[in-house]
Length: 166
Image (cartoon, rainbow, N blue to C red; front, side, top):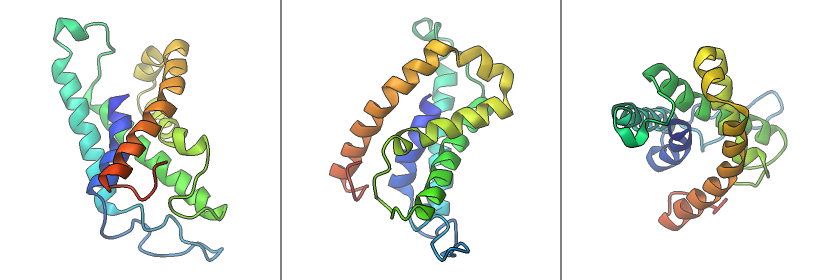
């Protein structure tokens, strides 16, 4: 899951610049995504997720990692891209719900990128997804994700990368 976990933090760290929605509003008069979703952040986040995935692929030959699933570059790209697309979809619905950038949306904020990564993986590489994402693995991811999400967001806040610690 590292290729899916890394992109959101990386996007916050390297982002800025032109918003993906170009500053446009939806028919409801609210921003489509908001200023927090930028072109540089998206591509930088995907690139960082791919870099961590490539490092994992390179390490697969080491005995200590022999029990882990064998990633491939396509699955890495799907996980990284899906994570950020899932986050953007969540932002779209947050804007519709009247929740501004940085506002809390419990559970959705913690699992949006996981849902996007899973969806991209199941659609783009179903054989890999069904072989790797077993029920125990999915349960472990669902338990670990909120803890990691909280810790990483607190670190990002303390580093000044995030405006809020959630």
